[in-house]
Figure 1 (cartoon, protein in one colour):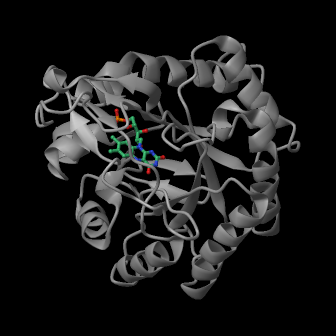
Figure 2 (figure 1 turned 90 degrees about the horizontal axis):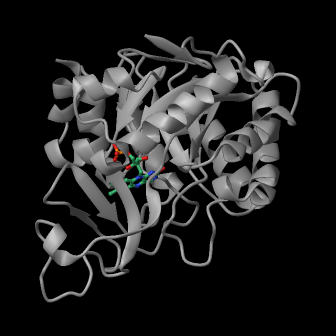
Length: 316
Ligand SMILES: Cc1cc2nc3c(=O)[nH]c(=O)nc-3n(C[C@H](O)[C@H](O)[C@H](O)COP(=O)(O)O)c2cc1C
């Protein structure tokens, strides 16, 4: 069991936000599994993302690897809040639901956070120990046209963090985390943590989920199982986000780097020491889950391939 802010994740295994945690059926199946200690919704926006046939996912025929061109969920946050309420009201379990959200603007993020807080108030989650609803701000989708992921552009991220800080200061029962993109050199990790440590003496960020897909990746039709060989590229947009076994080493490196800077003997960011790390990326076996060295482990691609059974396989 791991405590992350005001939520408890037991066992410390969950799904990472993805296309297979899009609707009520997916979410209920994940919630009902005894092998998940928490579940994460697909990333929601205020209005819902305009999804079309260019948004898809393909699996590599060489390994448990996927390439996806999806943006965010077509369902707006309001729909997720109805589903979250429905799932939680049927259960006495302490298992939390992490609601993944994103916005490019402060106003938009304020509205999203306020809607989630409204639901928490309504279902008594603010007064409950442990609480069962947390927020993950997705800073790292690589597939949005003309919008750099804010996790790579800290001048875009800072104003959004202020919105989260304000909400967490007003309500200490609110658990907030960030979904980060994969970083590839030391200054990126240091810069990310510097932005967080500038926000106050004690971080209001309870967790970092490391990491999202590796953007700007390309696969060809002959490299993937089901794609039509008429198309030039494996996904219609040509470029997409790479996930699964192909990014496992990079994800391990990201978790390792953050853990060293926050918790290691030579940690430089001691004010951030309460931050928990959810390791994501190419977790396809119990060995992979154990080597992640994270406080909790999550997966998307393996879950997409195996269904909810994935969590049983990772546990046994
Ligand atoms: C089809 C698909 C859709 C995804 N959608 C989201 C999303 O909506 N929000 C998000 O934060 N991450 C999303 N991700 C990224 C995953 O949460 C995860 O960070 C990444 O795939 C690496 O983990 P994995 O190797 O276990 O798949 C998606 C991944 C896939 C494969």
